Image 1 (cartoon, one colour):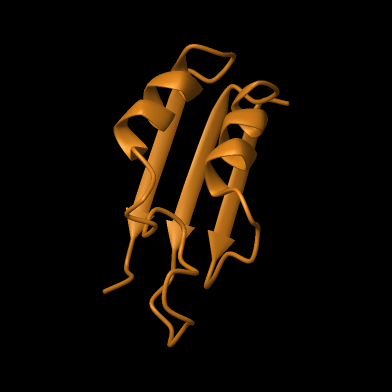
Image 2 (cartoon, rainbow, N blue to C red; image 1 turned 90 degrees about the horizontal axis):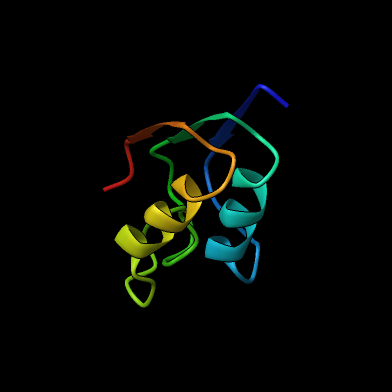
Length: 75
């Protein structure tokens, strides 16, 4: 897969980091847009403060992924 675009208002997956790392194993380019809508606390992509997002992104780039675009409108 050359490119994957994720446009979300909330995330209901139980392990956001694993999902993104798994995607990064099969795509070269990923775009993630987190829209600003009233969502449940902690349900936005990249908002979980218990995850070391820098380490997740490093892990993503150690796989097939070589381009990542993140646009976060969540406040």
